[in-house]
Image: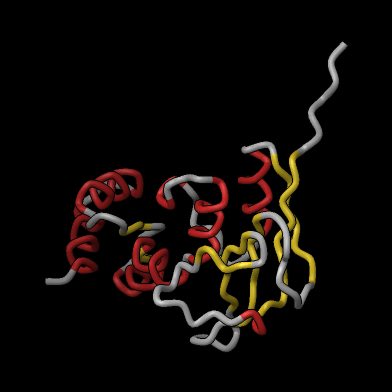
Length: 167
């Protein structure tokens, strides 16, 4: 019996959706998130293994964690769901008193620490994110790194928010 069948049986035995959620949440393997269960067909559709996604598609999360000197588990997985991912990035930086936005560039940033984006070598419609410091690549979540400076397409500009002046 796989995890989906176990969760489905727990949900069917429950009297309502809240009870199903509680039962499924306690029996879920670590990193598994149950969004909603209506029937057995929906089980596979709405169940995602966030831990696996973070490892394979979490370069933005890892680079932001590196930039802010945080553990990656303390940084949200921004790109899932895909809709409004940049809004979540901006909100996260705002929490740390920074503003963030992307600009188009093709050259290596020479001064400071920067989060840089470029085309993915693995997925054609995806991007990959790394961190540069003083013109050198210092962090690539994919080890060993296949990154080249020619792949750069965007840079994340991170600036401190203006502190309000009090009287």
